[in-house]
Image 1 (cartoon, rainbow, N blue to C red):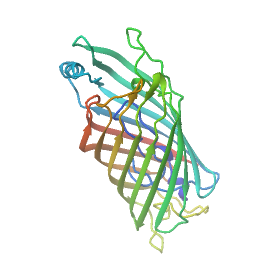
Image 2 (image 1 turned 90 degrees about the vertical axis):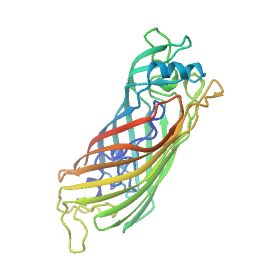
Image 3 (image 1 turned 45 degrees about the vertical axis):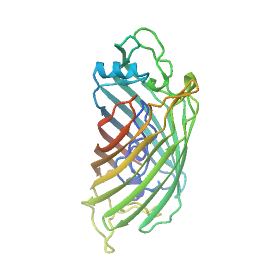
Image 4 (image 1 turned 180 degrees about the vertical axis):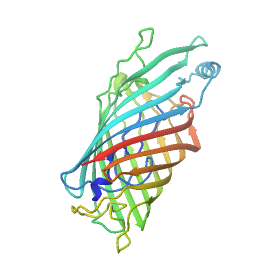
Length: 338
């Protein structure tokens, strides 16, 4: 089984960037790694992969009294019961070193509400719709062996709606819309090293926020972390390597006998979001940082299907008052390479 069979759901094997605001950024893409940490692997020339990802983020609950008190301090605070992001992605190998990817999300926020000027709380309803399209390119600098390194570049396109309205007919702020209206450049990198069935991976993505709808700048975003993964169940060759090339870093077009396997992984990762700006004014209570640990598993079928599940639990977070802290995040994904 070549590397292409390890890149199942290539754009969906990792989570996107921060959910501190109401928009998630692009997924990292590649096999190995963990939930949001992605490996430097690329697809073989002429091969494809596709997948689907579901991300459920549960924020801490804030009472109506808490929201009203924050509004009295001139803080535009809000809360939701949950944030849901379902995305579909497709990747294509240009050559051994270059893979391109597209990812289109669908977002939903249930029971959005925020404090009102009269000391109460205004219900804004359930917000849903197609989000912004992410285009990414990964260029792998390494030529195989036990270590790998790749660079990432991309662009977020303003394909999502920015005209959703509240039950009273008022246009919602851009941070609550499915789309942002902005064109955002993306850069990043990934590196990995392996020893037998064990792989250590590190990756990072940075998204530069452009000017969006309603004269908004939603703030730059960063995600990064390290992941430790172990593969179980793959047959070993005489050289001690898995026949399905556990970490997929070899430049190899030759098919070998396929074997199903499991990956267990754990990652320590963090996300940061800069303060947003509306109508030229910086919102001091926006943005923040959270650090989480995310254990998970991934099944790699011999038929080139893959499925994974992971949960992110915060170990430290400093999210400013306009947004609630995160309680946990659950991610499920499925994909196939061909």
